[in-house]
Image 1: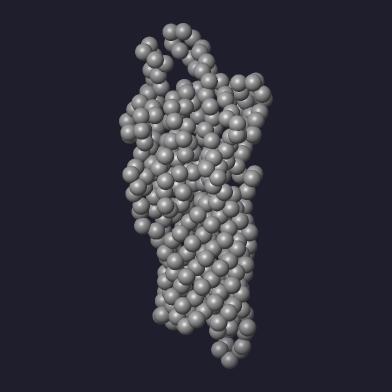
Image 2: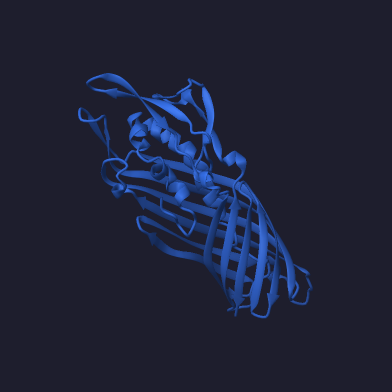
Length: 337
């Protein structure tokens, strides 16, 4: 399996990679069944990424001086809750899949979890010569099998102040290509300090600002040459687009400051299984499936952030913790000019 130094993008493409030649059997059950399973399997992973890539947009409510510039490196870790590691798979939701022991439902691993022991299902498929046939399939497990309980993220971020109290922000991580995997990120935002509009002769120990930010993550994995399933141009593509709205407050001292925020995240992800897949029953029967399915997921949720910032000259260090659907911790190293 490929390892990605960026977002652990493997949690998005772990299904086709880790399930190995099981994909052949899963597609044999029908595109609808394969899509249904993949949707439940991948949803927590894309949701976790959507939350993770939106942390670290701010480290203070106080705006920079006019024409001020700040550049920083943000590292973030989102924590995976136990309820995101499994989903209830109900046999009644599937047309051609049942559990080997005929259970009506089981909790099975998402892309963030791990099946221990393995869970086996029986797939029924229609052979044009022999009629209905059955085959057994071991369901894919997730990154929990390697003991991973976090979703890491990192990016460069810069801010410029065309006006006092106004910051135009951008974040970026260059497109990374590791063998057959490509992934990258960019985002833009604006933060406005509302207290900057108040008279200068008033002393306010607290600064208040608002932030609106857009973030985009895209990635793909080309597994045509993996020999899992015969076919061509086989790949998984994922796009995540999010908007973040935050109300931020912080103390306004020279060196050490505390800050807090409440915000709302809204976004959408799309994962496409693309290419041609030849589902075969040995020498007598084969079927080609082109671009099997596309999965869309919406992400919405409230966030609360608490943090602290230490500023020493042009250098500052901040750390914060965000309470959300995926709790997370962020560390920022920033340089202001």
